[in-house]
Image (tube, rainbow, N blue to C red):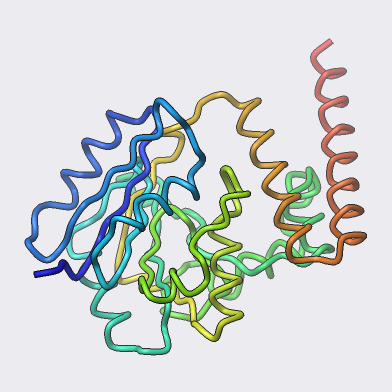
Length: 261
């Protein structure tokens, strides 16, 4: 009998976190767990997920970061929710930073060029309460307590119908790390599927389990950000948006360097 659910975890230098993640999932005959080992040949997060999805037999796919800990009942709650709403193609749980249940960004809107400048540049640090950032994080529901349709959910834990995932071609492997979930959500919504945030399901996402090198993190983030802009904006807008953000980043780094002298 084929499993109802396939849980796919892409591992990259995160053995200690992975053990806790697997323990939190428990055991069930109705699911399979596929761990993709990216340690020797790191092909990127999206590509690793696609590799796992090709081997998956479940009706639903749960993409789970190794540095997560699934709280009791969360997986079944997401399955019950998506199973009861045929229009829902993807669902994400409520995320917390730690056992104290400090909130973490679980969902967001797709950023347009102007919003991107206020969300992804140093302006966010200088003006954290700016209206464009508030809109990006659905500030009207900042407590994250209501089930709602959203643009995108966090890639730390995503439950998606396998047929929809295959219909849109899976993750775009041009995104080595970061923004791959935003792109996937965008394509799913373009095909008529709905993306939902479901806070009754809860997952801890500790973060930083796979990559510690801040220089590499910034490089991957910038490249994936620009890839997202190029794919979903007109190229002149994408180029100007990315260029303006990088100038602001450069000025901020220059200012920090002078402060340290």
